[in-house]
Image 1 (cartoon, rainbow, N blue to C red):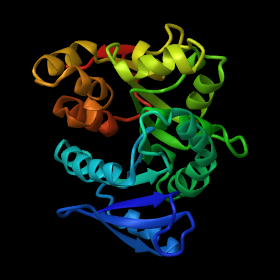
Image 2 (image 1 turned 135 degrees about the vertical axis):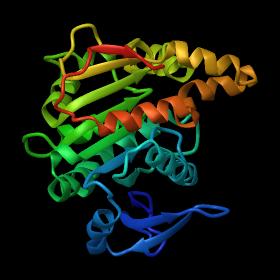
Image 3 (image 1 turned 180 degrees about the vertical axis):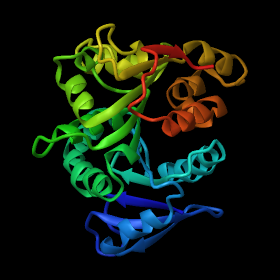
Image 4 (image 1 turned 90 degrees about the horizontal axis):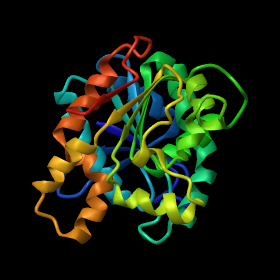
Length: 286
């Protein structure tokens, strides 16, 4: 079972947030649960006392996120990660041209990710056993969340970012994003692909030519606990064998991670490692 904390409109009373459980079928089925039952439900479905929070990116309708959760969780379990899965569903639109609106909504949702999800789970499971996987603008939202509220210590064991829509230079030591990730998470694993066509747009048009880390990788000067995983060569192999049109490849270059068994296995194996253990500064996805 997968649980969801959603800050879209509650189908019962028209107000966010709401808590639910996801089950698979011809279409994802969401069953609402009371807020006070959410943490016990998450704990009941953790096989090893850990939990993984998943944060989607921009242009992600509710149904697509739920389908992704239901597909990803059993594949990661098959690769040995047996923790609970929690989806944080923020109100991204379903319009690829709605970047600015989604960014505004991500900023508004950030305190809710911290107060409604990360902090309660870290208290329940402990920081070392509370992990987070963010995609695209979800990485931007996550960093905003970790910066919100009162200063404090670590809240996450592993933080994993794919196709991160974050200013690359901001992830260096002494910069806001790099510092808060180092303070709040024991380890950052950052997957990037230099052929991500979607991230070429916010990196050159929307954000004043500031390159996105999910396309360019982490800065050369970075924290020792921040690992960069180079995925371009592996992606190029998947692209050659995809048979997709150029138009379809545009979106595929940004979201292929969740369809790729090699990446799913790598992410699951990352979550099984001790986040405090030494790791190479960078490596290739293979």
